[in-house]
Length: 103
Image (tube, rainbow, N blue to C red):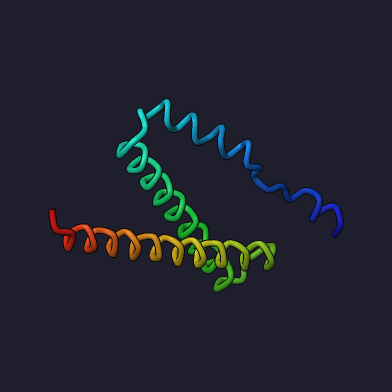
């Protein structure tokens, strides 16, 4: 059990900054970078949803090999979908607020 906990590694701030700088230089920063980041996040959520559907199908047919991994796949997909919906809601609210702004 201790080995499993030790094998889990988080992303450090330095790694995140390196990824950010790579994204900024690759896409020129600005709106294109945001669109690319949003597209990659949506693709990742889609992949998690596919993994979740496969895990649920395996559970239903009794072909699941590791119940814990199947439950994790389902939970990851659910959490990522909730996060994506919250981001969408915040973006829509920001758009509406910009529409109400007087010039």
